[in-house]
Image (tube, rainbow, N blue to C red; front, side):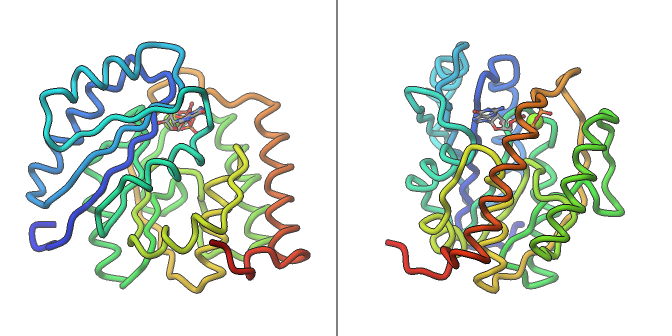
Length: 248
Ligand SMILES: Nc1nc2c(ncn2[C@@H]2O[C@H](COP(=O)(O)OP(=O)(O)OP(=O)(O)O)[C@@H](O)[C@H]2O)c(=O)[nH]1
Ligand SMILES: [Mg+2]
């Protein structure tokens, strides 16, 4: 990372992350200081109902490299990332979940893979053979089901689209975001489907995942809506050819 002579923007979407947010920002600062590259962190509160925003803002007051923004109401992660990207000035953009399931140190692996494989997008993947993951069986089943489904329909060259650590070259997001409709669910998938459709090279990297929440926040309703939104991407890609159209 030391000889990376371009700025990195880390976007951290946060919804009701009061318990983790300060450690999460601090760990990210420490990590990127260690990396020795130029960086900025954008924390984007997504209309949290707890004091995530206040905590982040107070903490960031003394920090030059951290900026905190917020949505007045809850938009969902996808729209939150898109909005944050408008403020980003880095050549490389890292999406990092605020719950610290994935330590920011792992961004190094993503940068290594990007360089080695000359990739445009590198995504952390729970299904990479070298990944160390420890998460509940129920989530594994959901994740497997989703993998086979998306593989079958979209032929994406990846085995896990959902993990909360991703690295993009700036150009990719500039091209992809305007085309994305970003329903609340299936947003990660839509970004990758469009990037793949535009012939950007997407590669997976191994991650180590420490599941912080004893019970994930996913409910049955979420799975059903994700299914619906996934089908909508299918429809737009193959039937409407929506992603081929020019979008401003
Ligand atoms: N659940 C949720 N997360 C959001 C939202 N907006 C932003 N986020 C952030 O998006 C990231 C991923 O959300 P998580 O709820 O951790 O999703 P997950 O990792 O798939 O699920 P968990 O197993 O519960 O951790 C976190 O940093 C959240 O704070 C939202 O509307 N809902
Ligand atoms: Mg999480």
